[in-house]
Image (cartoon, rainbow, N blue to C red; front, side):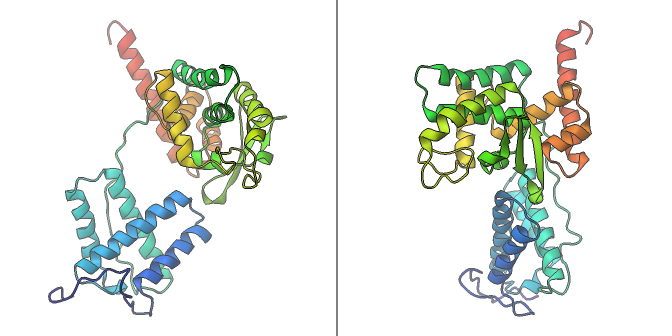
Length: 323
C-alpha cells in the first residue's frame, strides 16, 4: 500500500469509504451500538474501546491509510509499538490490543472488512500487580471514619449517604458502577440483600451484614428523603441536587474517607478487592466469591488467591524468627 504523497486528513473530518461503503466514522458508530446492545458492556468499557479505535483510525490516516480494509497486521503492530515507545502502561497497551481484536472480529463478521487483520495480533499482558487491600483492622477504621461523620450532631444527608455507600461497597464487593445503578427496590432489608445488574446485563443478588444494613436504613429513613427531587426517580443513592449519584462522586468519597481514617488511599474498586480477599481469608471457597463478585470466569476470581498468599507470606516473614 503506497504511503507517499497522500494527505493526512482526520477520519472525523473526512468520510473514508470502506469496500462495502462503510466509512470509518460510521463503522465506529456501529461498533459502539454493537458493544452496548449485543455485548452489553459497561459504559466505561464502551467509552474506552471507542476511544481506542478512534485513535487507531487517526493513526492510520496519518500514515496515508484511508480505507478500513487497508488496515493490516503490520499497521496494527506499528500502532501498538508507537504507544509502547511513549511508555504507556502495560494495562493500557493490553486494553488497546483487545479493543483492536474485538473491533476487527466484529467488522469481519459484519462484512465491513474482507479479512480480520487483528486475528494474529499479540499485545502486552497487563502487569500482575497485587491490588490495594486493607487489613481487617484498616477496613474497620475506614468504615468507622465514615460513621463518625454521621454521629457529629445533626448529620448532613450526604454523610449518611457516604457511610451507607462505603459500608455497602465493602460488605458486598459490588462494582462501583453496580452500586450507583441500584434502585431503592433493589434493597431488601428483610433478608439483607442487594440486587445489582452486572457486566453483560447479568443480574445477581448479594448479601450484606448488620453494619451495612444499619447504615442503609439510616440513609433511607433520614438521608435520602431530604434529597429527593423531581430527578431522583427510584435511584438508591442521590447527589446534593437530588439526581442519581455518579461513579466520580463515589470515588471522591472513598478518597476523602481514607484520608480521614489515616489509611492507605484507596478507590471503590480497592474496597471490592478488600472484600474478596477477606472472604477468602475467612474461609469462603472460590465459587462462592465468584458468585458474590459476579465474575463470569473462575480464573478472574483466582487472582485473589495470590493476594491472600502474598499477605500470608508477608505476615510470616514479619513474625517468624527464622523466616
